[in-house]
Length: 342
Image 1 (cartoon, rainbow, N blue to C red):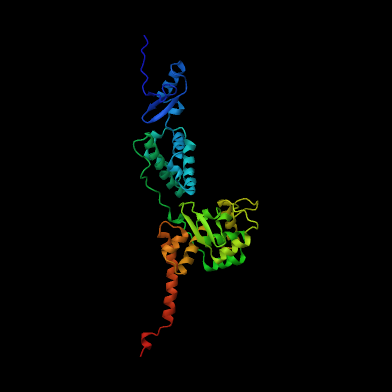
Image 2 (cartoon, rainbow, N blue to C red):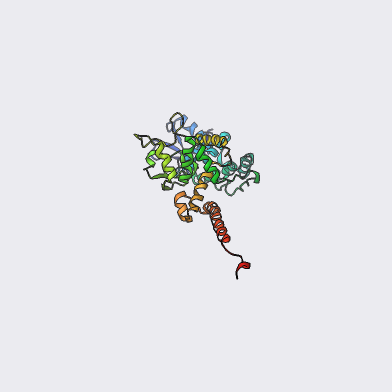
């Protein structure tokens, strides 16, 4: 005797033209015609979790997440950082069920990457965002990655970007090759993050100002050029000039990538004995020059685009301390001691 089992969770939205297995907010389409043996086989496969389309895998979650505004609203820089973690997760867990994730799995992944602390700390950040998306899909009830304790960077690995000194700037401007010199002037003159330098096109330069939409913050800025930056740009501007042409280009006359720019600058820094001063240090040098000129934190932020004043206060504070100390020295040198006062 054959006992028929009722097919639960069947749904159609177009009067039977297409059918879905619908359960807990997720849909899996049944492609076979309704009422056929193939339809029954496909239904039971989906219901048993054996059909690829019905599984709540990390591969499917990544696909859904990247189609959401959680992803599309990210800046290009953040997308690149997030993608590295997504690739890492999918390398071994593409077909793993998301609901199987436990907090200890996240901590274990972080521990495996302890040798690269910055990446290790990105793992719970990205996975937490993806888990929040999984909760919205009805795949999870709680977020196992949320609140995972970050790994502290060992003291010997903490990298401090050193602002370029007057001596380093003088050496560079006197001895650097033309392309590294142009990169240098864009960096210190624009006061932007290195990731934005290679994105400048000639349409962004009007002869006096550069325009940029920051890759990290999405903030649009107009940057009046320093005399040195304006001279450097005018010297290399083509005539006629294609406005869509990148300002920084490689030896093959192609737009320069960030990594290529970094390699060029590292080679030149080594040649000139200035390896201690990196690309980010040029941005901080620009902040210090603005501070030396008497700019307020707000004026500096209007140039640099810093969302937080903490980094401005750090490097501008150093510049102001030197300025104030020199002023104090001058006052000290011109004042009689108490013993000489009659």
